[in-house]
Length: 259
Image (cartoon, rainbow, N blue to C red; front, side, top):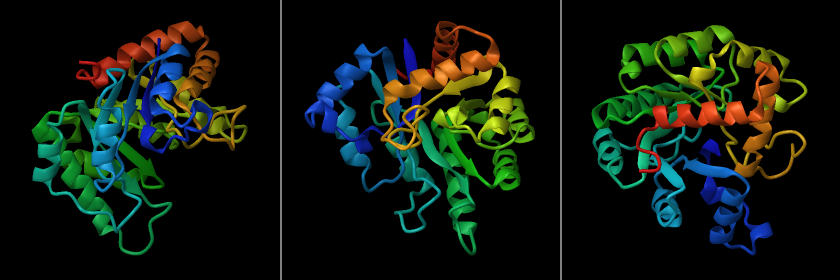
């Protein structure tokens, strides 16, 4: 059984599933993906996301506000803690820093990130961290706010080995997406080789970042198989071994998933 440790199911196109989310889930599970973590990016759409996935034991959720959009409703620490008690919520995030999309004074991003870390520690839920072109500040804030106490995952990792190593030393998992299958991702594939299998997760980030040979098309959780196959090749393992280890890692990172 494969696990997609990070996807946005409320944004997946259902055209090929007769516009039926139920059919989509059924066919995804039949394809070999037995568990999915549907990740929050804002609080405006969060209630609808919760309602959408509520009937499905194969789907867990998170709560949080993505760092990309300044104009999203800002959650307080108290609100994040309260919402994290909602059934199916197994993590806080995604949160973090994104300087690739950010412009001007980004103190609001850093403040938002700190609030999420504080909420995760209090709620005793792991963090889902997004980081892009913000290596130093991300690690510094994680250390300053004692993010290791909450633990969690550096999702859709695209940075270098020194950053990954620092996150690993804080007890975080490193998750790789379909980006590792891209022709221009040789440096990232090298990072995959360094990350210990015991701290490695796989994801799709669907509907974004579809792996080769589906690059440029809408991504789906079933394509996590391609990520597993790429990791297997890089690590000299079988895809089944990668599926087994990453599944075990997922339930260690998110122990409430599937409960």
